[in-house]
Every structure is written in structure tokens, then in C-alpha cells.
Amino acid sequence: MTDTSPPPFLFHQGTQPLLISMPHAGTYVPPALAARFTEEARHVPDTDWHMERLYGFAKDLGASILVATHSRYVVDLNRPPDGASLYPGQSVTGLCPVDTFADTPIYANGDVPDDAEVVARRDAIWAPYHAQLRTELDRIRAQHGVAVLWDAHSIRSVLPRFFEGKLPDLNLGTANGESCDPALAQELLSIAKQASGYTAVLNGRFKGGHITRQYGQPGQGVHAIQLEMTQCSYMQEALPFDYLPKVAAGVQPHLQRMLKAALGFAAAASAASTA
Image 1 (cartoon, rainbow, N blue to C red):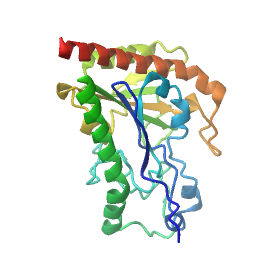
Image 2: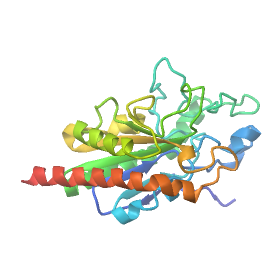
Image 3: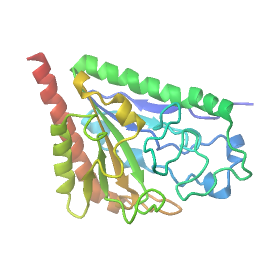
Image 4: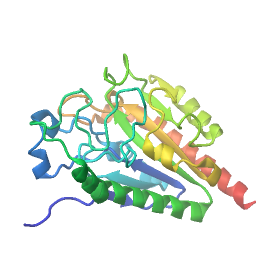
């Protein structure tokens, strides 16, 4: 039988010191695994939908782009490899999730993955994604002297399991200031707060997941920022999860300003390192 599953990721190499990671954009679930899912879970509702389209302008900025192909229900690329909680004491989903954001089961008959299955998924999908991420950051830093990692996410604006009320639209996370230069973080926050019609916060409910925390090492020239956006800023938050071009067009200029600011910061840092 021919294997029709996609590779673990899609990758575009850019020319500038910016890597955009989209670890939750994938929707693929192997058929044998989907057969174990509930009907709800087969729709993979917790996907960060349409990230490539939303950031469609990024290639023109010269950014490298790394995009997951498999659903986070298969394996979550933004979780530590040991499955440790990113927010101890708060409700979270795991490395190989067993429940949805709505706190409903993913597996119809309780047929959750055992330890061996978790390791197999991690080795087949999680490890290659992170190897590519590390390789590209190293290449960018070697070429430019500095690298900016932008971890792009989106989420439904109302999710009682994880937060009260409506989430701010633009949630910047820098691991409480540990993953990027504070000056860059403040510049990005200023741009986000000036975005008319949108709300913004820095290191609020979402401070950055494993990718931001693992790879952001400003002392070594790698600055990582996570942006968690409300999906109502660019798409339908319920089935069929359609992209809304006119709505998206409102927020895209602000995303572009933030990425240009990140590139400006990288250019200044690169010049300073070679002076």
C-alpha cells in the first residue's frame, strides 16, 4: 500500500534573519488514527487554521517559514518532549492530547495512546520538526549574527477551559521576558496596542510554549516571540472554520508592522555585532 501521509513539515528558506514557525497549522491525521477519534475530533477543531494564508506576505519580507502538516491531535509540536506541563496548576493539553479544548474526549472508546505510541509519534513527527527548526536558527545566526523566531498561533477567542471571558486579540509571549530582548518585546507590544480595533497584551495568559522557551536565547543572539491571535480576527471560529479575507485584511497590516519591526531589530543587532 502506498504511503500517502505528508512529511512532518513544509519548509521555505528565506533570506532574512527571521524564522516563522507554525507548529499547530497542520490538519493531517493518519486514517487508522482518525478511526479511533470521535466525530468531533475528526474535524480537528483546535487547529491554528489558515496560518500560511494569514502570513502570506511573509515570504516577500524574506522570512523563512516552517509549517507543521500533522494535527496537534497526533502530536503537539509546542510541548516539551517529556510532556511536562507548560503551565503547572492550570488546565493544559499534552504532548499527544486525549481531550479537546472544549474538554471532550478525542478518542471515542477510550483507546488513548500508550507510552510506546507516544514515543513513536514523537520520533516520527516532533523530532524532525524540531531538528529543522534548530538547523534553520543555527544557519540564520551563522549568516546574520542574530536570529528572530516568531512562533505563530491562533485560538478561539472564548475558551472557558483556559481563560475567563474573551481573550485579547494579540497575545505576545516572551516567557516573561526571558526569550527575547526587552526592547524588541516593548516595540512589538507598542505596535500591537496601536492597532485600532484590537486588544493586546504581553505575557498575559499565553507566555510562549515550548518552542519560545526552548529556543529563545537572547544572550546567544536568538530572540523568540510567540503571538497567539484570536481567530475571530481573521476567520470563523466555528465549523466550517472558513478564512474571512475582508476580516483578515484588517489585522494583516499590524502583523506586517510587527514582523518588519523584528527585522529592523535584527538588522541593528547584526550591525552592532559586526561593528
